[in-house]
Amino acid sequence: MASFSNFQSDNQKITKNRHDTRNPDLNPTVNAQGEKELDSFTKNLDKYIDFVSWARWNPDLFWDLITPETGGIRLDLDQRVYLRAIARFISNYMVFPRGYGKTLLEFMGMVHSALFFPDIEITLTAQTRENAAKLVDEKFREVIKFYPLIQNEIMGKPQISKDSVEIVFTSGGRIDVMANAQSSKGARRKRLNCEESALLNNALFEDVLEPIVNVPRRTIGKQALIDPEELNGQINFMTTSWFRGSDEFERNIQMLDDMAELKGKIVLGSDWQLACTFGRGETKSQILDKKSKLSPTFFAMNYCSRWVGVTDNALVDINKVMELRTIPRPDLKPDKNYKYLVSMDVARSSSDANNQSSIAVLKYKKGRKGNVTSIKLVNLINLPNGLNFSAQTVELKRIANLYEAEIVVVDCNGIGSAIKDEALKSTTDPITGQDLGCWDTINTDDEPEEVGAKKVLYALTAQGINSDIIVSFIDAIESKKFLLLDKKSNSDYDASDKENFNNMILPHIQTDLLLEEVANLKLKMNQNGKYTVEQVTKRINKDRYSATAMGLWYIKEFLDKFEKETQKYDVNKLFMFKQPKVI
Image (cartoon, rainbow, N blue to C red; front, side, top):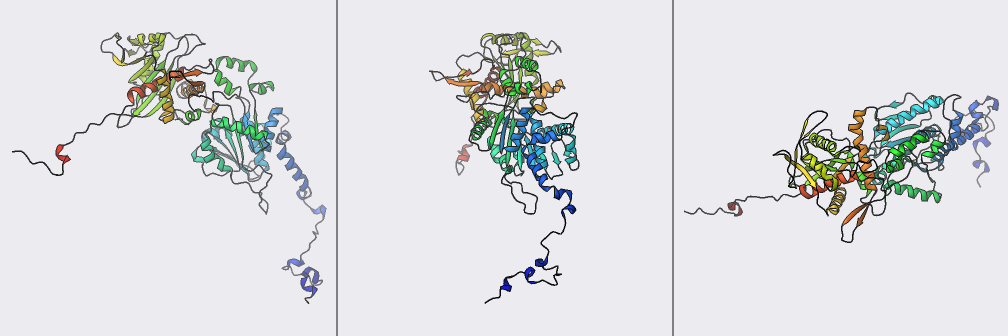
């Protein structure tokens, strides 16, 4: 039988000469260092653990802790709820109005996570890297200003440029930026914040953004574990509201259901009155003054946090229209590779409460067979109320001459015929004295003032083609041949440079308003099978839509035609052998 001593360790068997340091069994199992000899960190380790747990769970109280006696931010109740939601839920959807301060709170939440989760990587995404970098740069400066102690937690100098940001903390945490685009595909981060998420395309989100947070954070200890209680893969959405029926509207509704079912998601939102009640942002009188001047849809989205538009029987799928917004800048002069068409919807009244005249500038390109392959809405101008028909005609001719338009389509039904009458006259620019020319119509027998006037004006007077105009607009969207100006972020709306704003930014804003009008239209069919559109809210005009749709109808009806190819054949080449000559 084996001896019991064979199963004993050297620590039990050897009682003398225990000096072999290479034998692990002979190492002492009791720490000879007394409690007084321990460093302060080790002695208070349990307190540090409690503090970190407390700070992770209560971010607002942590910010209170480091708020300076003078300056800083005194957080309101709603701001505390915002910060705690970001720190406690796996996904948050925040819908708040302009001036609420949501981006600053969002960045404070990112800084808080970077401080208390070592080696974590957090990114903020926006429409472009430039927009994201500008937002992070501005909010980082504000946080350092209001909470100077954060400067001590920054490692080195933050790397901030026009389209890139990298802020590294002493904890190893890192904050950077990305774009909501294919260029972000393949990147990996631990948490993701989507700024102005209402503009997201769901296919892009699922293909590019959602996989970014697939790899969870590991602890920095010896075991490098994955904490199952940590918010690994957190994705937050911060935005103002947008259109009903869009992908993000559906996501918002789904997250509301998930919140009710306690799936770790939460949706928060408010209108302008919440921040105003706490004294943040603009005053009540300033906002109500804006309400009287802005379009109802714009105010509802940007200040009331309402998702607007229709979901049932919508004229077109608003998601498809948003996908077509790819043109980065308007045309300020004609492109020699394209031809231009200008279309105008004439105001029915000079009253501010009624429609305004709108002018759409469309450029198009034809293929080899004569069919139109591309149509772009490169500018959209809304004329101010109060201009008489003579002044409106001057503006129309200015724009048509600027773009060297070959066709000008004008709605001449009703009082719109006054524009036609003015266009048939010789016109002089009252400001520059330039001769704007005299036009002749393509489709009527009206006589111009000058003999030999250029045939450029198409007077849209035919009745019963409204259904065809609607179908042409729908076809242009569905075929994806029709492209629009892209959307600019709020940070791009700098009105200090008036000329740059009017030329480069205002056309993008007018395109935003065009989408508002389209989203407000419902498609209806009459008993005779003809289509009509109906405004859901009468306060929202449809002049921009009408001007654009008329131009698209003309292109489809008269320009988008396949030309028959006539080929001349040599009869001799139709035979294998040449026919003999007749003598």
